[in-house]
Structures are given as structure tokens and as C-alpha cells.
Length: 71
Image (cartoon, rainbow, N blue to C red; front, side, top):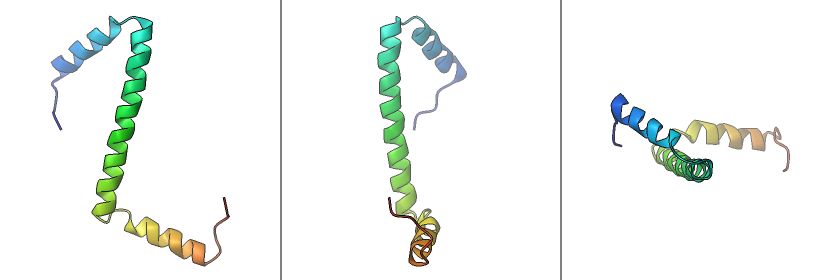
């Protein structure tokens, strides 16, 4: 991942502030999609590295013990 300086971030913020409303709205949609993609990649990485195993095991144990409700 690329690291940006505060100077770069300030320039990005200034550019965003100069956008018309409809382009800010378009940017927001893009940012939401981008953030969701990053989140999916992080979850996938965590799953591959076993970071979610304890949660999965607890969920399975709770299910077997009847501690869950059908959706």
C-alpha cells in the first residue's frame, strides 16, 4: 500500500473541496465501493491466516448447543 504525506492528503482534500456536488456524490459512491473491496480483501487475508478460526469455532459450538436462531 502506498503511504502518502500529509501534504499529499491536504492536496487531495483541496481538490475534493473544489468539486461540484454531483462529482462529490460520484466520488462518495466510488469510495464506498473501494472501501468495501479493501474490507473484503482484509477478511479474506485474515481467514487464510487463521485469524477468524476462533470465531468460527465458537459459532459452530454455539450452533451445536442450540444457542442460535434460524434466520
